Image (tube, rainbow, N blue to C red; front, side, top):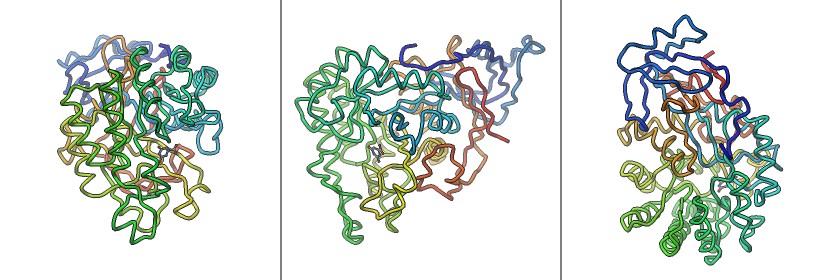
Length: 442
Ligand code: DOR
């Protein structure tokens, strides 16, 4: 599969995963069953109890998954792997190990590396490196503009050819509306989405947290919600004008969600994602100037958090992604104003998202849709399913097991999490990807 990175492509792994609660929306499965994996591929699912008994005694490892969820491997369409250029923050190896630890079997890597992934040479470098070193599948996102400078379109066609599955200047918006229009026109021709980092820079100025009474109280410059809302509205109109496919990244505001809801009613081709921190935390998390809670867009208000949950529940928000943004300790151990923005999110995303299931915001099936099948569909990558013949991308999850987040023990080089010390429920026990079985329960 172009754009993917299957070094060992699944050869050799034979498993029977027995008695787990399988949730696979691609086949309408939500019940107890067994999964047979042969040579790294799903051979079949048995939910009627016959249980692949005949296969036992063969060259199969048998895994008892009773009491566990067995899900398609998760797909994170928004990850910063930092390589090339910022290996002190993260590498392809460490970032994908963190992904697999968190239950993700495929990730999209954003182009704000050094050099920027704005041409096929960088795309090819990432894929070559990934082929050799990546623990999971990697799908690169190419830059919309050269150097992410917002002035000239990048060679999108060549990058698409080399394996990019989407285009974005993530980390920065495409401020020039004509360039955004052209990018959407090309995206239509290539059949890939443009991922919008929706931020009106003239409004966000050099803000470092949400604008409101708290930013005044803390003496920090604020970013108004409108900086996001206005750009989402602009991009929706441009998607309508061009017929291109728009995907809005890391939505954080009630106003943005209202705009997306309206756009979907109008039949505009737009999808959207949010991240666990936007439905778990409010701006209160930065009250003590905690730089690990500094993120762009910033954490918002209680009302926004409620709107994000409503947007997830009614389908306005299609995807949960992490925006995994690892930074070196030194880039966070400084004044709030000067600290880097971003949260290391791959290893906490699943348990934080499971809270939505516990709260009744989403069903387990809807969660799997938002974290596996829908991102696969948006990216056109044919994963996120346990259908017979698919690569065995599988996560086994103990929904009751609690664990305490210890930032220093994260596999990511980025220890920058505002969830350090939190007790979370829902532990990934095993991940199957690229023909390997990872056990995390010992
Ligand atoms: O907080 C963020 N960090 N938001 C972004 O959009 C970019 C990211 C990064 O690359 O660190």
